[in-house]
Image (cartoon, rainbow, N blue to C red; front, side, top):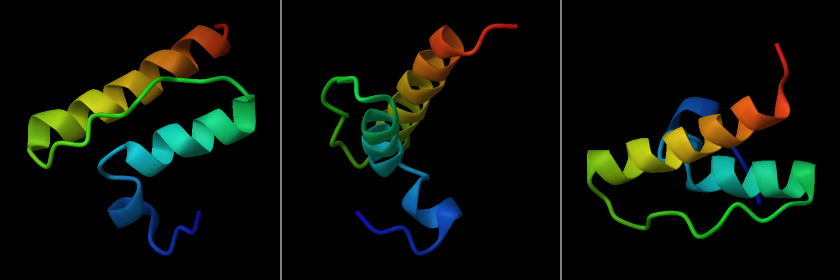
Length: 57
């Protein structure tokens, strides 16, 4: 996996989910592969929800 530009490559949440899977060693499920904005937001939301469960505070 290669990320050239953080804003562009992580904007749809697909690479972000894969990155979190690699870092955590846990499966986060299949990302939404749709191209609509709502699908991208769902992927990012899934990533943020996972991070929320891992970070205490």
